[in-house]
Amino acid sequence: GQDANPLASWVAELSMLDNPLTSLHLPPENTSLQFWRPAPRLETLQLSNVPQRSLDRSWGRSSYSAWISSQKGHHKPAPVDPRNLEEGRDIDAVANTDAMPDTEALGSQVDSADQNGPLAEFPKGPGAGDCLHRILEKVSFQGPADQAANQAVVAEELGRAGIDLEHGDAVISALKTVLTAPLGGPLQHLRLSDLDAKRRLHELSFDLPVAQQGDPVRSAGLAHAFEADSDHRFGKNYAKSLRQLDIRSRGFLTGSIDLVFTDGDDPSTARWWVADWKSNWIGERDDSGRGIACGPRHYSQAAMEEQMLAHHYPLQAHLYLLALDRYLRWRLDGYDPNRHLGGYAYVFLRGI
Image 1 (cartoon, one colour):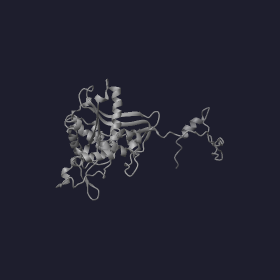
Image 2 (cartoon, rainbow, N blue to C red; image 1 turned 90 degrees about the vertical axis):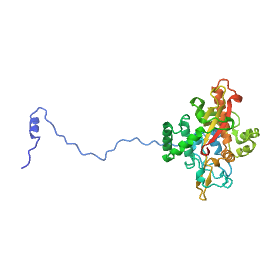
Image 3 (tube, rainbow, N blue to C red; image 1 turned 90 degrees about the horizontal axis):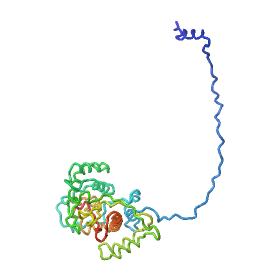
Image 4 (tube, rainbow, N blue to C red; image 1 turned 120 degrees about the vertical axis):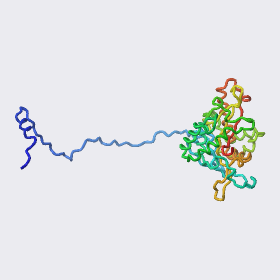
């Protein structure tokens, strides 16, 4: 038979109460009913007052990288990330084929690979250059180059840049040479490893006011400044190529100096210098264009000067010295540029 209703006894008890339960039946939903909605507002678009003033496109935030990206003619630089132009980040040149040395002039070599520097096989381009910049910003200049802290920095930055960790040993080897090699020239036997933390500043950022009033800075005006200093290495001849830039700038000039350092322990008597890391690749290529050799012998004085001129590094160096001059006027008591302002050193990392 059928099972008894399990609620039967409960229903019987409820029926004896004064207020028994009442069963209600709800009507089915009326789907024809709709929620009230306000009527749409009909508006007519109208053109408001049109500004009669034109925008001053020469006013803004510029940088050395932005200035040289305006180069006219057949030797325009490679495209650069707009963020780097805005932030004033230094961009190393991509592998350049116009400044390759004459392989015959290098003399006969049994094996070009034997003459390679430690960074010969290190990736090329702006991303790899940024990686080397960050490593030099973070590593310790004192002590062994292969100390554990430095190796950790190298591994971290290679991973951050997406570069194979197998290049780590080569970077440490290059780091040892870079830190212990004499800088030469007016700096004579001074080495980067001689600079303790009190004698150096990494990535000194600046924002300089440029032509706040009056005419904007133009290429012709910058070229004239170099022409007036014709006795120096980058004088009148460099001014000609500087005129190929299409610079028209007002507002602020922004940038970041790789390294500022002193050539003595006492900052009040020492000279202050600018150093800039360059990872430009100079070397030999096979018939397919693949690099087969890159080392110190390829970085002759002439080859490096060609790179300096091709990428407008003299302009960059003078802008950085100007920023350093403003900084020292603000921070160094008794500052005198004739006594305290040194110069600049460009360090071609693959050629050391």
